[in-house]
Image (cartoon, rainbow, N blue to C red; front, side, top):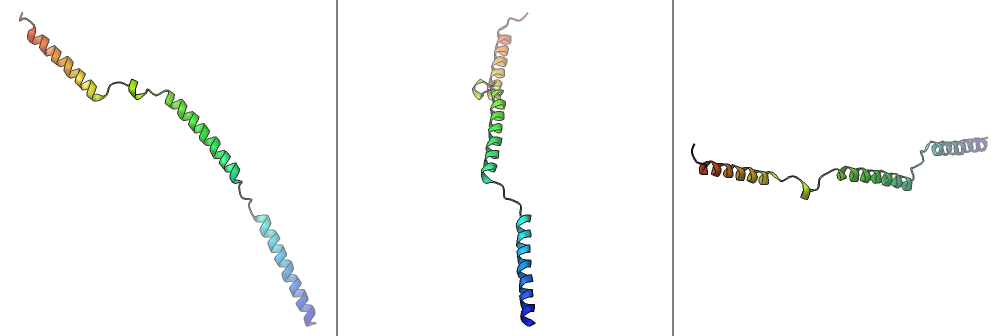
Amino acid sequence: MRRRRLWITGGIVVAGGAVYRALRRKSRVPEPDPALELRRKLDESRSIVEERDEFESAEIPVDRAEPGIDERRQDVHGRARAAIDEMRDAPDQ
């Protein structure tokens, strides 16, 4: 009688373990494929590069940009000096 109870208890434990393992495997979420993730990132980066190139094509290069503040200041001072010199050289009316 005692042996029979041990066999039944052992069978229940083994069956319970098998059921537990089966349920545990089904509930696992499959891990994402790293290759697919890399492909997605590459596609995303390509679109970003294309957008950046399109954006930068509308920008004016530095060598063709308007003069900086120092050049503008020198130009204004030069015109002012020229105007002052004209006023000094002009005959009084």
